[in-house]
Image (tube, rainbow, N blue to C red; front, side, top):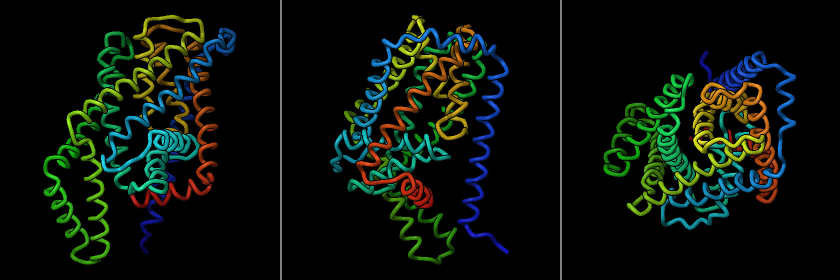
Length: 347
């Protein structure tokens, strides 16, 4: 007796969810066993609340920059406001905080397709393209972080290689879509003919229609000017994120060089790429610990306390902002979960 594709997908999703939760739990247990709890708790007494407004402002600025950049990653004939893209991006991050398997990556283009004339495959392609520019920017910042990597050098190098391979693969598809779109679609047509064996003509046409949208999305950056703007806003985004983590250190009364904030940013980005429970629980903490303790020699108790505060405040703002925007959009968490499942099936 054969299982249906839906059942196989659900089984695979459950396996992924359990693996992510197990990884998060293992990381948290490991970190908890490395610290003195009295010293860890004492770190929270160092908090200086005068920097909290700046942290909140930087949080929302990063999402505004994401919205600005996303405009240039969508086809130029689509008129979507930065405010709309800002809201949808926050909803996507909200989804990643409350739903498993990084559902926000699919929720973003799906919600956008419901509110704007942007078909889901086009929006999804723009999110994939966005990740390429993120990886390229992180690799550039990594060049600044590596000289200070110390004991974390091997971890950083392995993570960087994994990101570089991923970025290279996506970049190759983007270049193929840009310079030989017809050949790429012809290749997709041949593959579908082989897989479907000349049957299911309607399904084949639908899949080719989706492939055409995907290629259009990957070709959204259509000029040197747009490319330079995307690169500029990508650098602005990640430097703002680094500033956020630098101000986080100020909040604890630490005023190191900006390279420390950059290193924290890079290590967190590498760490959260691994599977985890919703909200990057555990992987965020190990990224902070790797940067602050293994690279710069801060006590692990301080690094963990720092990670708890910086993680908690961002999660709180994402949950509050996402919930408010969802309500304004007329969505509920249940409908978001259902739409996430539909988007996953469509992707």
